[in-house]
Image (cartoon, rainbow, N blue to C red):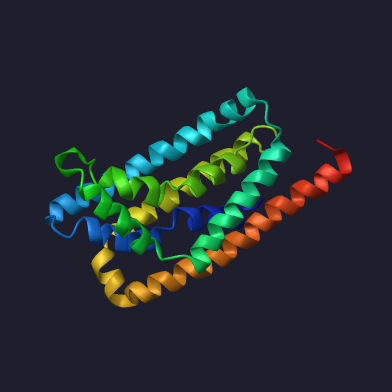
Length: 210
């Protein structure tokens, strides 16, 4: 997988643009300093979560005795379904708004909005965790390529931080509808990448077996 494919895959599953309306919703009552700290903490926490899957994900797969090709087929199917929710489902802002409303019922026991829902599941989504696992498999991906994937992940999270810092002017420019359109287009790209994951794995299984 070349650099562009890695970037597109991680950009779609992390979805910095789709996170902007969520950020605006959870930080509406905050001061400028609090909003900056929230954006930084959310980005750093998402990095930590995804880094965990990058470093230890392979260990988990090996411990469970799962073959790479089986994981690639299953992962591709899940990413494809994730892409379908981006295309046909509710916008991320609407989905996470319900999560925020439910979380507010917890009162003072609710976690920081930087952790939930911004870092997880908005930035470090299940799709992002799965994509990181598939892009850094030790059996098929060289260490240098894994390092490139890690660098791409960091770059996208930095962009996500910048998007959150510039949330108000960006959402004023493109509107919630614009953010939804971008998310749906990204869903189409992710569906194509996921289909390629599955087809390449099936072709290798037909040639070599599991």
